[in-house]
Length: 267
Image 1 (cartoon, rainbow, N blue to C red):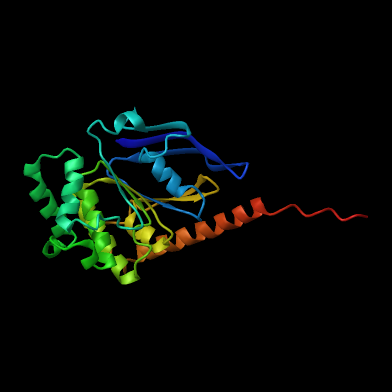
Image 2 (cartoon, one colour):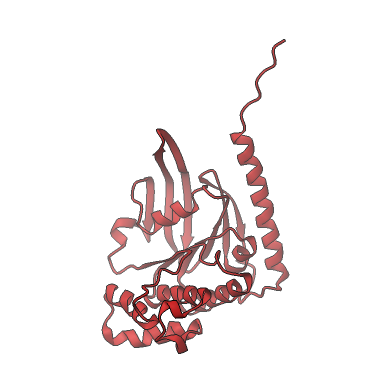
């Protein structure tokens, strides 16, 4: 069953008196429970696409619907979208438990549910013993785990992630990717994430979409790669090589498209 339907999505804005196109006629369908990765060079529209799906940017053309309803109507009708950014964005004056309780209250959850929801997600990311710690008392990796737990505690229908592991060392990032997938296995949330890391995209995704110059140019299907996945899985490694080759080809096309035409030589 399709959950996200995008048809003819375009987005542009004025920059220094010049009209700049960020997304151009994007078509995309994402199924319920699917994990989709967006990869591509900086400025190709990945984060803009996430913001539009989140309902944070409504100034665009084309159609964006969730389960057949326009994005503006769907959000706020018992439908929840969670967003995890590059920075954890925890409230520093709240403990870890209070940070999660804050979003549960904002989401309208009954207070009687809070303790159970908080315990479930903190155990899943191995932070149960730090429930009464403040963000400043946690490492960067622990804070990002807390951000993932905060997203899942509201049981979102869609989870969006914008390079959430890019600021972490590789060993910490590996742990967090596995924590993310452990929570996904439990909740089966639809996930759309942005990454510049080809191996990360191959490890997490069911499908990888390569973007270039505001459009989806190539698609890599990993649905046949079984879960749970291992970092030593040769299928994941081969998929990551395919992602890199796609990015290299796209970079070559983008460079050719932006290169000025040679000036004809005078006879």
